Length: 122
Image 1 (spheres, one colour):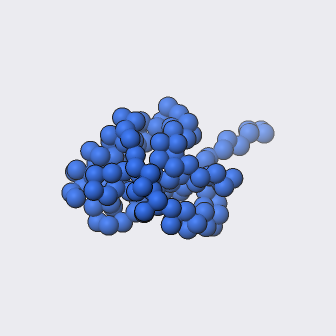
Image 2: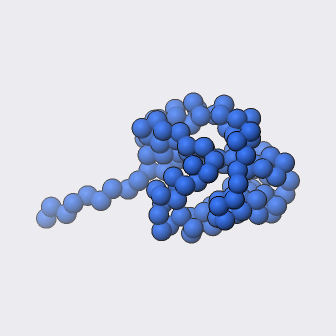
Image 3: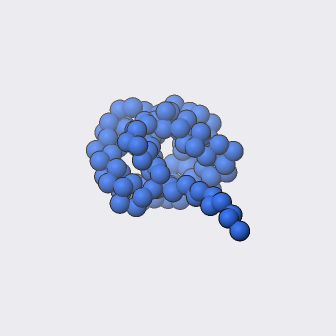
């Protein structure tokens, strides 16, 4: 499938709160959850997520540092909560790259480290 078509499917699933396919999660993403957990720990990220597309269906998984695994709509909802007001703009900016990677047979994996403010002591 072309990157342009995949981008439209991703927009529907991630920006317009569309339906995702649990069977696709089981088929393509469940097997990478352990790798995501290892990457999360190795890179010291706060959470990591990925999406996939197959025959027009979309699936997503998000893994948090505490070990919680969120699948499909639950993953999208959790990412929306984590990014709050920045969710729409972040997704819009990331979708073209996600679509390109998926069209090339690659899984777009995104680890996120939350920047914490350091108090000004001076």
